Image (cartoon, rainbow, N blue to C red; front, side, top):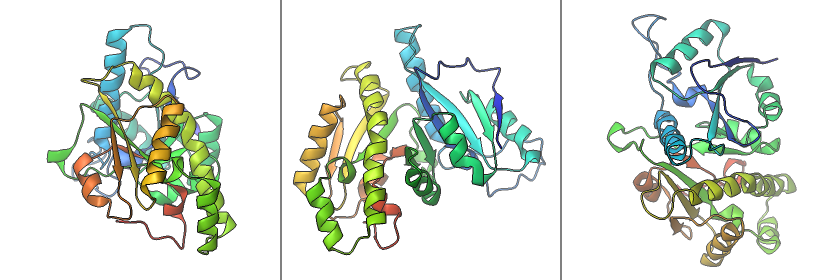
Length: 284
């Protein structure tokens, strides 16, 4: 059973037209640090706090160009914290001026049902296990990249990186993975990840076209980690077919991805289902 609290300080979006994203509260606020000044102090910023600021910049720019714009980010903050902490989470969001329209409080066991009932376009968390669980249940999900260095956090541009390993995949490639020993359950997770990313990619393409080529507050990228250059090219073609022209593309071909991610500092990282499956080692 969940409890939904609307934020009276934020204009409510039309959920049928907006890009509804649910964000784990543990990503925005630090769940580990206890405040020495007591429960009245706002929670400290989490590793993905800059994500909230970046999407607010996107919304503000869209509304500046068209005050009647409906293709906006609509944020639900999802929390599994105890009831005693609910008011503090809401107060902290207001303290930092975060554009969070709704707060959803529920048990961890009910999180997936809450995401499904609120028809979210994307669930975001810094916890790969939570992302994996959502994907396995058919809920579109992606990682929030941990921007732990305050000197390299980006708040004036939202950066989204899609997985070319997923988008450029084919039945032939999946057959090859099957021959390498991957189970049908693992491969199904891979297919689910591909299917779940399409709607979000289409929406990002539509939103990206609002801004033109230069000075966009929304930057999209593509990265293939372990696939070939042909898969990268196929992914770019697929994204174009979905209406999304990426700003940057990286074909790692088995090389470590960490140096590029640390340089790009994306907010949203759409990885493939295999990264979260036992038996597969992601390229670090």
